[in-house]
Image 1 (cartoon, rainbow, N blue to C red):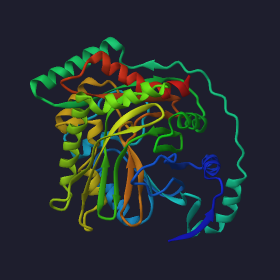
Image 2 (tube, rainbow, N blue to C red):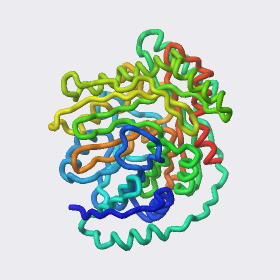
Image 3 (cartoon, one colour):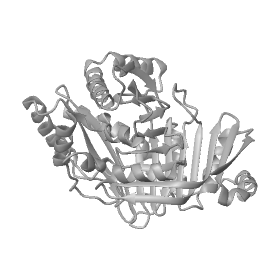
Image 4 (cartoon, helix red, strand yellow):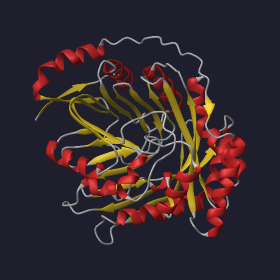
Amino acid sequence: MRTKTTKPIHNPKLFKQQLLQWAQQFVEVVFLDSNEYHQKYSSYDCVLAVDGFTSMKTDYFNAFEELKNYQQQTKDWLFGYLTYDLKNDTEKLHSNNFDGLHFPDLFFFQPKKLFLLKGNELEIQYLRLCDDEIESDFNQIQKQQEVAISHPQLAIQQRIPKNDYVAKVTKMLEHIHRGDIYEANFCMEFYAEDATIEPFGIYQKLNAISKPPFATFFKNNAQFLLCASPERYLKKEGSKIISQPIKGTAKRFLDGNLDQNSKTELSQNPKERSENIMIVDLVRNDLSRTAAKGSVDVEELCGIYTFEQVHQMISTVVSHVENTTSPIEILKTTFPMGSMTGAPKISAMNIIEQLEETKRGLYSGAVGYFTPDNDFDFNVVIRSILYNAKEKYISFSVGSAITSQANAEQEYEECLLKAKAMFTVLS
């Protein structure tokens, strides 16, 4: 059981910084920030969960079943992640590519201490075993002072050189022209070895220049995710399921006219629209596996949304489920998300594994939470820096959708555009 209390917050922006700074003392941390980005489906402006009372981690084998048992036993808030490689639990697939990060395939924890910020109201929920610490913790949070953090120059390397990238995209196009797949998301890794960074400071810089609606600071001991994701994977609100896949990217410009032209061109671009519509069809199919009959609906098709770094094309697909349907079953039947795989999904994942050179791990997986009422909300892990402090390894990956209309040089440029924010904060 949890003790709940509410507090008025006069400066939410400052308080969020203080909250995350205070959280650095804990082994387990999940900090989720919407950055005040206007969105239809938003439960909180900011969430912080720290200090695991119980936790679970596992490899992909039987992972969803273990998560289901854990979620049903605790009947409490749970925070954590699903890596892309859980595909190996749902299908006869494998992940044999290089892995420099070595994160568990799945990790969740039940936080002792939970903070939920909406507008100027903060709800605090502590497990009864530590609820006598609420007032002292709240006072400590408000006393946090900004700390200056220096960042070393990092020698960032590219796992797949440009010539190899072009050759691999050409090979993927051969699969498309043969009819093996219609579309696949092809990704490449940038990395630094023997690297030491201050994750809190790097996250602050990344978030400041990106201001995405699904920003995440995740810590599990020496493993970190610094995430500036603009994309929701899946949310459950009562009986309603919401998926918001992104497919379609265009540059931002300082000049207002050029920026508006870029946005308009994206909305009318037949290649970008076809990419998005293919994934919408895939998502509709995935959601139909748990949906009440006739309840799958496309609420918005190919909407254009503007972020600090790029314009994006986003669709919203919804369904309704019976209250007897397990939240884990909804995740299992839609994971990994269509925007990061392709269509048909299994064929695309097989080809991705052959052509990519890095195990995706948490990149293109999802971070989020379950509520005690069986609701959940998860993002898509993109535009993110992953860091293993123990092994001093930093990684960030970027990708793009390859369709029959794809041009390898242009896809390469799109990847560099998506990598810009990560390069900026690490250099």
